[in-house]
Length: 215
Image (cartoon, rainbow, N blue to C red):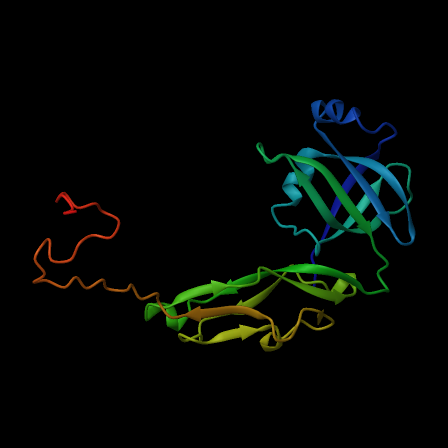
């Protein structure tokens, strides 16, 4: 089950260039929208959001968002977080307002556990997927899905069909899609140089001879 966390937000009437002013006030611009929710612009405290993200996950954490002027919190999930490509600071947040009685489609991160047996024999562990597409009611969304790779030998793999989804969660990826595998170590080809050929017996291709050609 997804963890539920709380966050407060203020209304944001001015957009665009006001983002710099918000940053100066320690706030982050955000938007809340959904199929049954009128889109509104808000702002959240940067420190509160960063603190929340230590335990939260984009796409799966359920948030009770208390918005200025509203009587009760809005049930949302964090749909997208845009960050500065250089500094890594949060620039904008998208919150998706959900209906707790209806299923939603989102992505859940994979947490790999265990050390593959094949790795100890020199094999190479390959993680083909880092997240899974799922459908579930908001209250059933897990923070992550664990995949145990400890039993994998060289040549073995785990597919989506091998994963047991949590109760109330449906996996939407192709059942035959590879999630993780252990491949054999790469073998370097040995270059064998034959000995015993005297220099000059075989002319080099593309090299002119120093001897003069008789006419």
